[in-house]
Every structure is written in structure tokens, then in C-alpha cells.
Length: 67
Image (cartoon, rainbow, N blue to C red):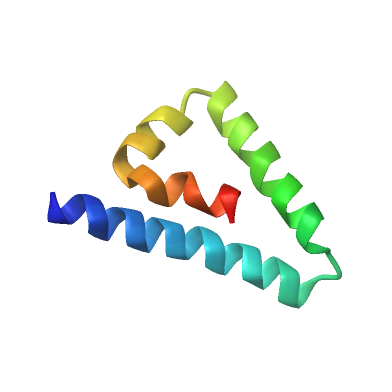
């Protein structure tokens, strides 16, 4: 159970850090970064990789989309 929290924390942190890097290094606006995250999730879901990823990461895979 503790590993679920740790996995959610580090995966969510990596996703948020990548989004922040896009914001800092490019001229992308926050809305465009959010669309990029959603579209990436849709593509990953199409290939069937999102469900195992979300099962491993828990809320860490879903919460960055809400933020």
C-alpha cells in the first residue's frame, strides 16, 4: 500500500516536471501543454498502454490532467 503512494508521487512528479519543462523551454501556453497531455494520453490509450500505466501509477497518472 505504501508503494502505491510512492509510485503515484514519483510518476505524477515526472509528468508535472515534463509539463513544466515544456512551459519553460518553449513558447507553449499552459492550455496547449494540457492539450498535449490529453492527446498523448489518448494515443497511449489507443495502443493499450494507458491502463497498465494507470494501474501502476494510480492517481499519479490522472491527477496532472486535473491540475
